[in-house]
Image (cartoon, rainbow, N blue to C red; front, side):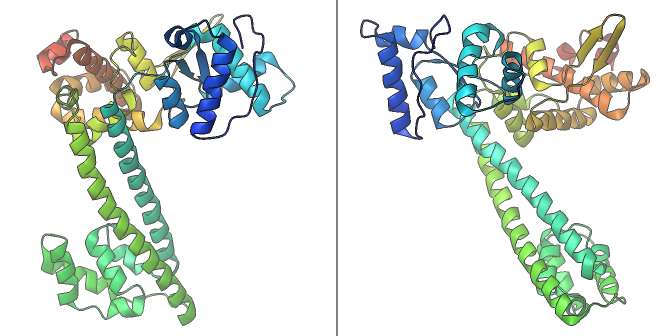
Length: 393
């Protein structure tokens, strides 16, 4: 599409190198032969409904101005052009081209993150994904045990712990579990580095040998097979989560901003890596601390119409980023006197735990922005100098 909105070319492009090469050829044909490559790249603006993947990387590498359009934005823009509800790939492509032609000043260009930050994002997101998968598998195991072996839920507090998985693999049904000896249970607890092993082993054995509600033998065997499968999955997930955590710490530790990020209260190597991965390391991406807070979704939004004015929390956000920032805020309560005093001040205003924690997370995002902008580590006194009570604390 040219600057006046006239369509210059239309095609469905295949994936891979063939599609990218054909796109470059179409752009070159539309621009003409008298335009050099550098000037051509500067004149090309692309709208695409994703911010990652081979296509995005290829477009950025070519020097084009790429705008990753949120699908929700695209949906609202589609309604602006048509109220019929019709939708097709061709119409969406036309709509995206027109959107970046007329409203590119309202859109955020793709961040110029470094390869190091991209590597941190890849391993960090997979690490967190595996943790979520482990939680799902644990809940499935809990549901299965509740159906035929509820005594195991009383005997084992942590279903994804190493000793629990080892004992369930050996004895996945009530009859076999009742025959476990104290030495077998103690050995599993010892390998898991538990404390007070004799008392815990005796308590587990007592619960496992208590009367259980019976189910038909064939049903118990089926459930036991399911338990063995889930135990195997959880064991693999535990191993890979631990392996990937090492990769996360290694990649994050090599990043130039790692020292500044780790100096923030509540940010260790894992949470710090998640914050870096989701914010990126392009220091020109956020024009101000407010822009970073808005992207983080820790700052509130105001809905005002006539005499009515309402302040609400942002519910459209990056789940991974807000999860990391709320975790940082909670951990900072024990590590930063200023953060604790700021949180207590919000609670004194009548806010609940989560709103007060979100306010603290919002403040910590602003502090992080200032540290990254000036290239200085966190300082407790400087961070809370605008809040006399917190600074005194």
